[in-house]
Length: 257
Image (cartoon, rainbow, N blue to C red; front, top):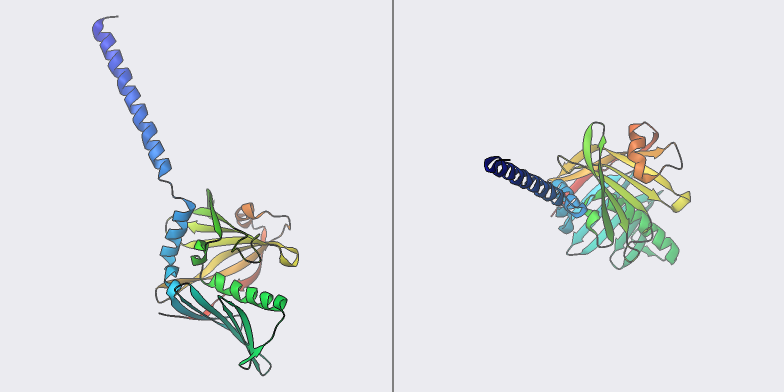
């Protein structure tokens, strides 16, 4: 082989090695730039502007009951009001515990009942401010593989809870699907253990706006197959293997700062 040909071959191999190295580095950079579960949730909260609820008052009606939430600098007061015949029931959940009033008179409750009522109040208020609650201290976030649902791509995030600070139902598991384009919450699912346990899947049916904040209404589904795993319930949804059981609708939403 002539020196010229040998030199050209060496130069070609060097260029090839250089191109391969650059390709590997570009791929590694792109892979490293993939969003983490935390980043996706932060962007979802920003997209919905629910971070504004950290220091705000929220009022809404849900299934014939009136709810109010007042949050400021980590302190909160969550209220539920409804009537039983002529008696006005007012439930108040604060940082230091739960209290029930009947016609403005405090009711003495056993701890077990106070806990039950408090969890019920907290549950409605928790869903009302999603996705904000996904940054609570006890939340454990895990990114799953992206999925396509009805022709659109979604980030899929699995949420579990630490026992310390995770509440009575810390063993429950949630999964959230956020639009890859807008980061808007579009679907969620959760498994639960009370009353025999089960799995539910919700699709956002309506997005309402109050003071620049997005609030979500849902169609609520349960699986036809009682052994359905939460991790694959999005596939069951696409295959029409879910049954609609209810609608989750917030009404008369008002936000003030």
